[in-house]
Length: 294
Figure 1: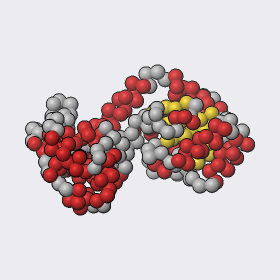
Figure 2: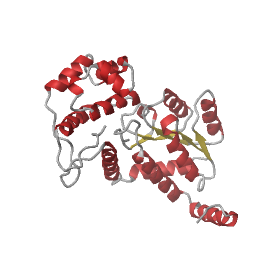
Figure 3: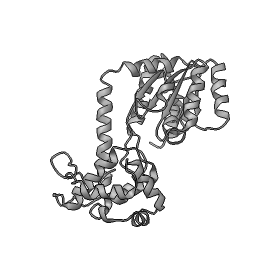
Figure 4: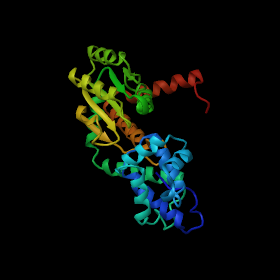
């Protein structure tokens, strides 16, 4: 989560300091979208938060009163009264600062800054390119190449599959769950697949865990891009590449996993001898068809 707007004057007031304390509390836990909505409400009303009842918080956030109680429990408290006592008794730290010593800005700016930090961590991890290079080789050799991503991870899987299909001869996107998912994995194995690429982001669907267990049981090597090395899919992955997601807004942001997926594409292209020829052929056809507006 991130603090509300109001830090433009160049100095943090009491409300900003209170917001900073709430941010530290909330960022230590993974919250559901409903819980993040409550957290956003409390950050915006940071100065009043220690004095609001659970009913008042529910009304302000547009959620039910039991949701506020579950929110407090998710933070490790016995209930909302315990959370309110905590907010009254614990002094709030100063609001986070942006580079240059200025306050961290509004919640949107802080969400961007958090993603920048995630990308810095990813850049540091990629100082050792070995895991990505190995993953690229595994994906390049698999014919066909199934690419799995459900729910929140569906966009990442579709983006990877769209570009991969320009250089890989047989990419099969698996972005829909249900009873057909296992059938499509089995069909890929029968067609000769040797590896499966999975994008797994929170909240992690049970179907993805089950699908990876089936894929490994069928002999596929599973390469997974996930938000953490401790994600539920880790136990069913042969090679897991972590890239943190941003949690500062009501819904996660996934710049890190997207960029890591593009790095995997690059590594896969390096292993496909005809990748450049395929790209040039596509460009020629696209020009002939007037496919793009330049």
